[in-house]
Length: 116
Image (cartoon, rainbow, N blue to C red; front, side, top):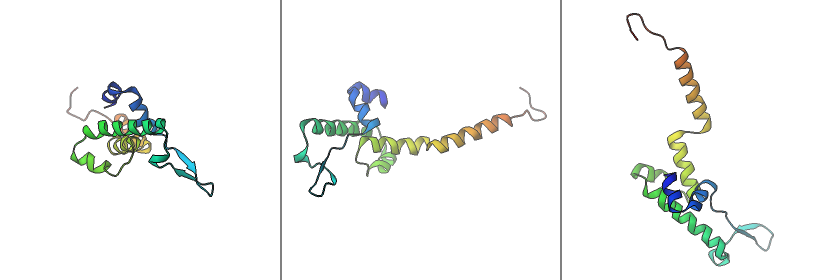
């Protein structure tokens, strides 16, 4: 998937891994609020366009089950993270899986009557 996205546009992969940089503006109370479409600059709109293209590439490669997992995601980064967690697991799960495999390897012995 990574190679297909990079082949289309190298910056799309940055959007998948880093996310579209959400632009904000201060409201009357001084609180940062997300920009509306009318308040976005041309560069902001290009970032969101890249996000839409990256989402398209990710979604086109999915089956129905995976699509149901990611249908509520709003950015390409969210989609990618959701797919990573569902297929590879969290870093803690990866470590546990590695520890389990290592212990199985350590405990591997030839049973009586078995040959190499």
